[in-house]
Length: 175
Image (cartoon, rainbow, N blue to C red; front, top):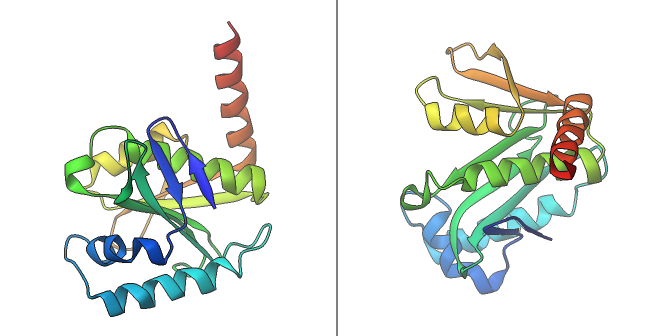
């Protein structure tokens, strides 16, 4: 599975990426090659369970187009983290932040969830102190509409809002 964006390639990782998986799986620390293989097997197993309107777990490596063999982060759609919700997640290596990469990941995963997997609603969240992540979710069109018990933000986007946002972008491009 592979999704290109303006600057990135979001794709499933393979055994060829094992050293990069070890370097980035438990970011900011490295992990062992054995744990990287465990992570890869987990991703393969959960990806095989994904069906239309039912994503178990989709984890994609984030690669720059200009460095297609270096993982700079992860992005995910996950239904295992919170019961009854499919949650959007992204993490970009600190040295690659503030370049719009997390926003590109979020938009691409929302597009996949609503267009290909026919979801009705996707959730996201971030710590109150994580202003950058808050802005990413806003830029992707998600709306902050509640809070976790610890006060962190909960965002969501429904299919109708996604389609409306897509229509507005399409109209502004044709002008």
